[in-house]
Amino acid sequence: MSAEIAVTGVGAVSPAGIGAQACWRQVCLGAPNAAVDPELRGLRPDFSCRVPEFDAAARLGAGLARRTDRFTQFALLAAREAVTQAGHDPAGWDPAGWDGTRVAVVTGSAFGGVGTLVRQAGVLAERGAGRVSPLTVPLVMANMSAGQLSAAFGARGPSLAVATACASGATALGVARDLLRAGACDVALAGGTEAAVDRLTAAAFARLDALAPGHQDPAGASRPFDAERRGFVLAEGAAMLVLERLADARARGARVLARLVGYGAAADAYHPTTPHPAGLGLELALRRALADAGARPDEVDHVNAHATGTPLGDLAEARTLHRLFGATPVTATKGALGHTLGAAGAIEAVLTVLTVAEGLIPPTANLVKQDPEIELDVVRDAPRPARIELALSDSAGFGGQNAVLAFAAA
Amino acid sequence: MSSLVNPVLARVLVSAFQLSDDALLPTATLEELGLDSLAVVELSDILAEELGVAIVDGELAAAASLGRIGELLGELSGADRDATAQLP
Image (cartoon, rainbow over all chains, first blue to last red; front, side, top):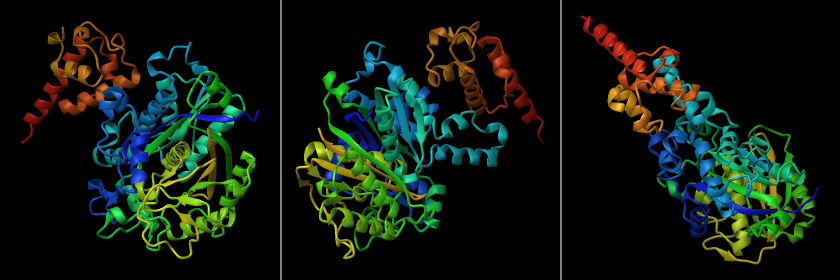
């Protein structure tokens, strides 16, 4: 089955706050929100992009909040927003309106419940095995974001979690798309989530020399495509999308935000942490997404780049994008939001859907002096109005795993 | 009535497990109150933390009712106090 797939709902929890619109506004303002993080005190760097004022108990109830790690909590909230927007009324989820057996859940995360794992390792070391929380396992497991979403929404279709590091969110959407095309479900809740800003991950990424040092200016640290880029800024968040076959969405009168017309995945088969210098895997994934969409490179109107702000990664990606798409306008939203790791592909999918729907390309925050070796038309300073029929969002993860989504106007 | 139940136990059941105060009868069992096996271990952890006592795995689940759990908590707290009192 090669049915067309519609996006009928989007939801996000991001460093801009709760809600896809909050995320969109922040990115359109080009306003970076990295700030000193008290939990990272004494580390270098000691700043991050946190989801601000997140009270899980107030939003999910104390019971569910206690039984879920922060990465699952983000996914639950983002999914709730997406499902509501799609017009699947949460209050009316009876079998008549919501056939849960036909609803799939696919989530992506790089780290799963690493925050809980680190805290409980501390409990074990300081207080002994008898004080380790019995909830440790169900909170930490990477598939729990999908399992808890299935339970929360009565979704009894296929439920699974994928891991392709920082491409996880995009991979999840691609896999969900495949489940819909295969007829394994009628509705899919899919996206990515990450809550891995803690002392251990921050220290570990710093040891890899992957993080921007920032010096006296945390807000200016995440600067994709800029000549002064030095690495990424750790961030957290989630985004979930509601996907369904276009014919089904139209039949039930749902508003279609955009169509997911292509997905391509490929591996660098090169190195665990360094992207292939010629973008071999990325180019393959881009070409596969285009072939899947039945489009030529010159038909691409916009690319939402992965661009995390690392010197090597941005350059390899920029060369690949330039080779394929020439002067097509590109944006890099991690300048504003930081790098949400496994959530990034899904957050950027949401932003690409909104870019297509609004006809507006958000700027790249912190782009002051573009690296002369990067020949792309990178949108900067202010949102650029554009008529966009076809847009790509590419993602790449440690492990050399690349995933590309192609969205078309509704 | 929860006034007949150990006050810490009652408070935890209301605040952490969202149970109604009215449901907390001394004869009620954790199972009747809807706590699954995972929730019973959670309850055990929370009570151990709040009261500063050691509760052996399975002890709460084995106690037949809220009344009996209250007695158990009383005994454990008393035992801890005695142990502390004997310190030089």
